Image (cartoon, rainbow, N blue to C red; front, side, top):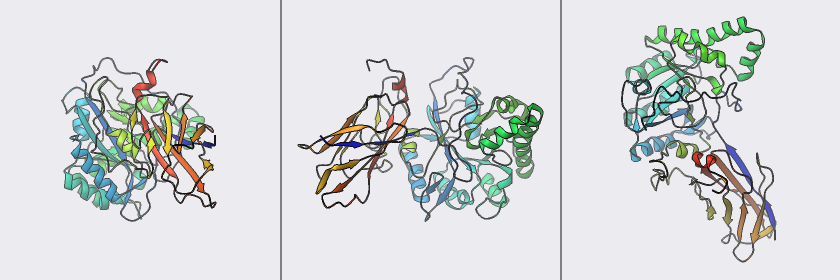
Length: 393
């Protein structure tokens, strides 16, 4: 039987800054749950956006304006409630109740397109939102938000959060740390403290939350949260927020312009233990489709870490089975078998998938030696609860 290789991109939270940056490693492990704040069953998904454009190609950091509007419409169609950062904070501290499936919208860095492209959509839907700004990019010219734009959005109900002074890359933070405790403390106090003072004085608003640039943080940063009055601090690790999670390392889904399943996963809520997710046909327009049948289906959320991955290529004309190939990232080369009688290409995963998302890509040539114009690509999700199933799953 002919063999081919599958390309599996294992996707977790994507770290970001104004430039497209590689994902940083975390300096410390996430904290355990706070048992003094009992779980009330409510789950909140915090979405993080960056840049927008109606015409430029989508990237990880830039999403099309039309897609953003579709996502906002999808949130409404799913019956999810978009709440303000103020209501989220009050719920997190036990002062207020909120709907059991809620969404918080956040926008990082201070791109001008948030005002020109996203703001009109947010006003149309009446959704509250939070801008995470870093000082050096405010009024930075070019693609940066201006002070009048920010003030107009605040007047319309937006809230502000701090995103540091210079939005440093993780390597800059690590280099500052190597200079010694005193120098590192002064560095953090400038990045975390001066940014808060600047935003509060410039926009006459209280700043009580912080988004780690690139999601990178250290123990020293967590220790300064209370001193600077940051009630909440957000990472870029994906996951739903529940009341018992520590306030200084809260998860957040970074929505990527070139990876739609992140949004699907972020807006999927479990009804209860053992129940299915809320997504049905509502998100059909958000999930990438494939020209040929695949399993698991595009955008599916599966409950096993050992699925069979397959593609039915029976409708491909003049297929040369010997040319089937996928390249694997993060998983190595994986053999799959071709069944001539059905034209099905399948591979049984033999090592448990432990990341929340998996993308598959298949390429081939026809008998004339011409490559496929577009590789067959699709993504599916692994239900994070399945990561803890026993071996006999």
